[in-house]
Length: 115
Image 1: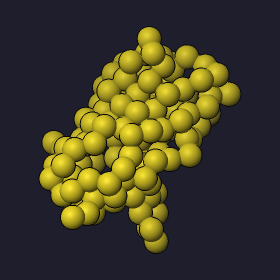
Image 2: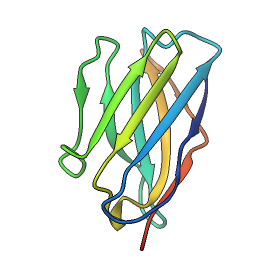
Image 3: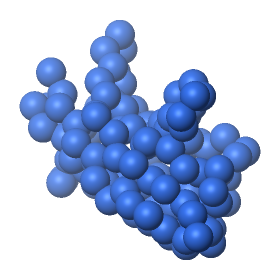
Image 4: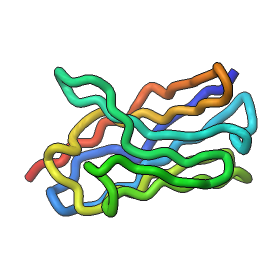
């Protein structure tokens, strides 16, 4: 069983930056693929970043070049650096850990981009 806790969300102006963190407990993350997802009000949850256990990273076009996912297996943590934020990035951001048939979610952290 993996427990995930996100932090680092908040209110930021358009063009600003935030760094989200996700700390895991209950298991070492080094064999898990880790991802960040987001869900805006009235919309489906969408994937925004992935880092595999081999540290290969992938992003959808909507955030490519603005968001960077990284991991620190020694600290059992995953990060999402978000730059050049836009109002449409406003959402609850969730951390995800996946391995084989197992997937775990955190409770999310709110990111609001507004002037």
